Length: 197
Image 1 (cartoon, rainbow, N blue to C red):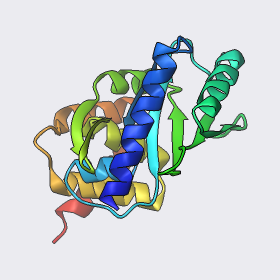
Image 2 (spheres, helix red, strand yellow):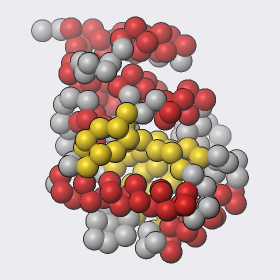
Image 3 (tube, helix red, strand yellow):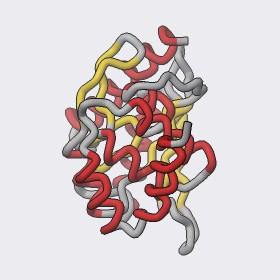
């Protein structure tokens, strides 16, 4: 499985770089799913790739950017599907990108919709995942993304990262940011779970 992910991650990096060099738009991205959790300590089984991305201008506001990115990536052999959330959807814009063969993996790209997420992308770390180097959200920012998503697997991922306690994790900053984002109570519950014998 590691070889499969390594090839897919390299392909994804190339696709985003080509969009920048072709003048479509510069896309910044970092892993946020199971592979990101694995990067910070505990290996988690996963079948897909999830990333957070941003660009200026953003396809959140510019429909032309969506069309241009879709057209460009289709010329690269990808299958592209933009999904817009309803007004109350916690994820306003998702890009489902099926990579060209031989990997043909599906990548879910959440487009950054909050200022703190854009800042998180700037703080991303370069780490080695599945035998390749890739940008991954810093542990605090990854935990915040997971807390905000709030699903059962997301909260298990938070506990997994807290338990692994990577040296890059700044707990003081994490608690501070969780408070600002009104996620402190759920973070404290996860912290209590990790402390239990």
